[in-house]
Length: 128
Image (cartoon, rainbow, N blue to C red; front, side, top):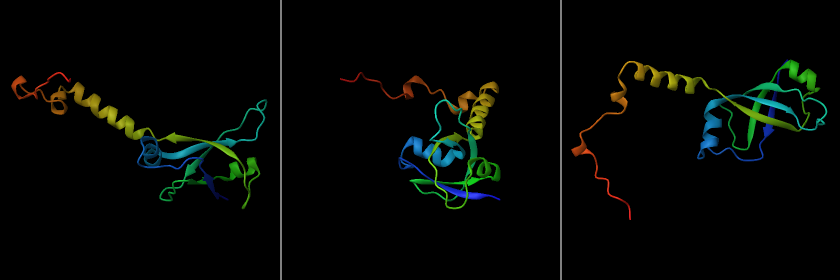
């Protein structure tokens, strides 16, 4: 059994900002824990999957697995306060770094950063 959950966000995710764009384009999972645990008790953290294609700027929708439901005692219609942490999908960033490393090691760095003669460089006058 799986249940879907809606998590209201305290701030609107705006794809016009760097942080909002990064979260909307590079996150597929988030970590959550209950907010009302005492500091003496070590909180249990659960990884949940963000539902793709269902985007609202003030709410994220997640898929809760049966083990999470059982441990938190959740059922249909239950409301709980949680703290969330978005998890970035780093695979795109790793591929970009690998591409730059491959160009550097193959002596083709001049393809990305061509060297032009000094005469063709724009003039650099001091700003006043």
